[in-house]
Amino acid sequence: MANLAANLAISLAVSALVPLVLAGTAQACAVTLSDLRISPVAYDPFAFATVRATADVTARLDDPDGCDPVLSLTKDDLSPIDHLSIGGAPAVLFDIRPVGAFAAGQDVTLHLTPDHPADTAHWELVLSRDAVLAPGSYTTPLAVSARLDGQAARVISRGAFLLNVPSRAQVNIAGASGHFGQGTLSTLDFGQMSSGEQRRAFVQVRANTPVLAVVSSRNGGVMRNETLPSAEPVAYTANLDGKALNLTQVNLRALDPPPSVDGLSLPLDVTLGAVEGKMAGHYSDVITIDVSPR
Image (cartoon, rainbow, N blue to C red):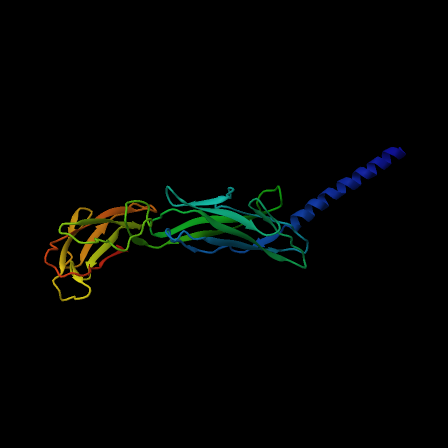
């Protein structure tokens, strides 16, 4: 009976410890989460710059015991997430990275004690793929859950990531049709001029919205002698994408570039008029092309 009594006493002692530990665990993870704070992003689809946003939430201990809650940044339905996809196809991608010494995977573990009853978990949202998105505001709901490692979420805080995309339009003059910005051309050089001679450039336009192109000539469609501007000028004609430009006035063209980094490329053909009998010298004009969202 002595042995039986000893065994029974040990068994009772172990059983008595179980509810105390569980009760202590439940109290130790009594925490409150602040609102989920996510910095908004103004995204220029043609800037090709490093873009970062931050997400953070503060956990506060609600009882006198310590707590090590695990905080996870998730979708609004609490499903796991390691990146955000925003827009259509292709979409802008943001990778999600937890920040801090106690970050692992997409989780951040905080160590809360009576002496240190509050701490903040941080995540970075880092742009990993560009895309040409239409102008507007794109809102993605997110959530942060707090739990003990291996247990279900107990406390949840929600917020939203806001991506603001402005209207953007760019133009470039190139010597050949190709990728936007390659082979930038500032001068159409006719060398020793002759009547009817022709040169071609390409007007490259990219935008995330329909645009209005404004084409004008400084001299009203003629090239003037730079040394003696009063001398008889050399007339020329210009066609943009096969359509004649009246350079005696401002020309307006509505364009619809595809939503891509290369946009569209339109041929600009310039043809000299009669050159015979003109005073010797260097002749020039300036054609200006501006594009703006419409």
